[in-house]
Length: 535
Image (tube, rainbow, N blue to C red; front, side, top):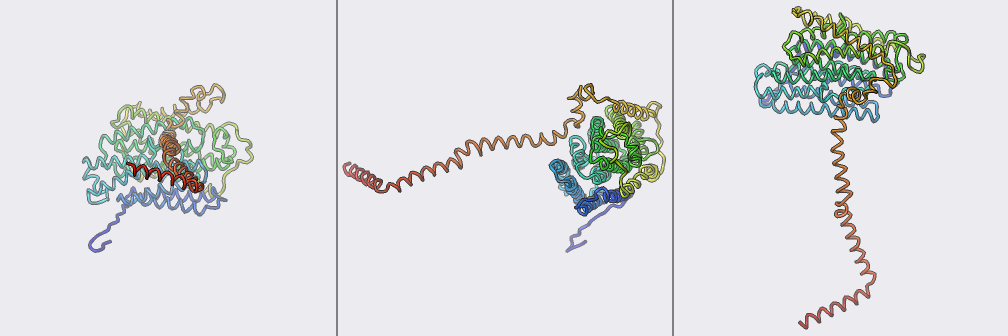
């Protein structure tokens, strides 16, 4: 648009990456809305809920097709605001706390993006896509890349901003399926993929370290968790670490491939968890479950397919991307620490997946009554069937689309079989962990401090909440007690009040004793005048 010689240009980028991602977001969000039609049945505000989900999708569309930082910020802020409204949808204290943690963590990313916009003014345009190759290696691009990485770390909940992701599970389950699979948490990864040509060597090393630690922390924490939705949220966090780790070694196309396959089985995983929680009378503790494969065969089947896809079981969608990433990682020039983190975290992923399987599907039913547990309703089943088909066939289809030319991977035997070995060891450890007898000799009770440290995401929720709010509140309380309720009160407002009050009483006494006061004053002034006249 041109106005008086000033041209306003709005650019949209429709390449294979943005169109494919948009398609996946539309498919998953449509199935989520179909699912939520029955899941949120009876909710008086379901129309508002659907509108919020649609606003979420529109914000994501803005972010996907924008090569311009201003419109990216619009989409980014839209995601942050709508996610806050959805997390506090069930209005209680815990939802409010989780919503504040979510929105304030994401504000850090907003500030980073605003700083990038301010810095990009120097180049004459906010369309970053034209400058990536041209300015890569320059000091300006170093700074811009670092700020983009910071923004992506907050959105994708990397260390030390990880605590908001499990807290966001306070939202309704359909929202969790959408947020944790294909929209909010992957927005940061998508931004990193777009900016990856400009990343320097040291920034990639930093990304590798942060994402590896996040992946390891999430995998370890999920093995100590008993809340079904928190386990799945931590699995998402682990997979986000894997995607960013892949970007850090220069394989951004492969990270995008895993982003799409993960969106499919992660959304299905959340939908199955929602169905289980719905049928269990809103109980989320996996220790109350068990034997659900008898009561809920279809939901259990979907849960196991998505769980196996998460583990990278051959020929499911997760296998095509995660196994490919592990093999390409083995071929890359990566230090031993990053290599160990990746394979240990992969083993832990299989471990908590098998642990979840044994707790939820296997053995006896541990709830009060199995009579109330039944299969979920029609629309929920339809939504899950769509994602089930895509979780099985989506990986191979995407492989044909994204990688039409087969990659040649040359590895020695021990590295080729390392992935399979890690998977089998992880599954065996998960079986052993699930077989623990609950009692005084339980591992987590014997080493309570260690297990509480590992199980609470290395105390990160406390650091993100109490450490940020404790000292300001403590200083505020101290200043209030010293100033407002202490000496300032004595010498300030209350002190002035009492002085004036006492002076008023003296004045009042003068007024009440008028004759004697006047006589006293008369005598005093006569004495003063005589004293003046004499001298």
